[in-house]
Image 1: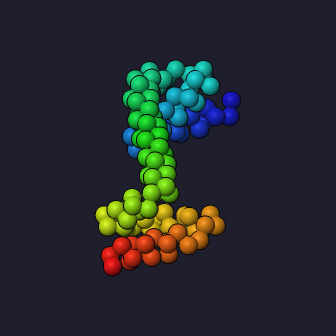
Image 2 (image 1 turned 180 degrees about the vertical axis):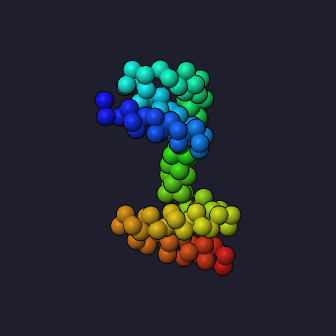
Image 3 (image 1 turned 90 degrees about the horizontal axis):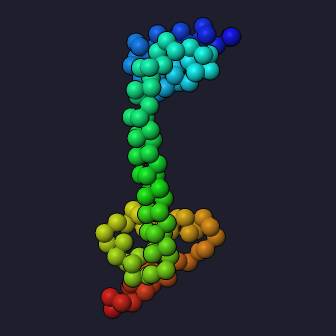
Length: 120
């Protein structure tokens, strides 16, 4: 088994560096090798790793749906874009660039023209 040497080298670097991911990798290698030397220690970390993974996954999903909602709201409401231009102009700039990248030109100019006419 070619990875047994890697297994022990990996274990020593994990102990020295104290990385959770290294221990999880070590656990997977141990299971493949049929070795249970440090599998007990790594198994106690599995619930923590699963919680961290689930937390990261939830944050990613919330971010994706939040970005979609924000883009959809800006794409359908010129008044909302005006609100965004006052409160978060950098986000509106990202919206304009993404819309221009997709081939829709003139949205920025239409907004500026309407907002200028509404001031007068």
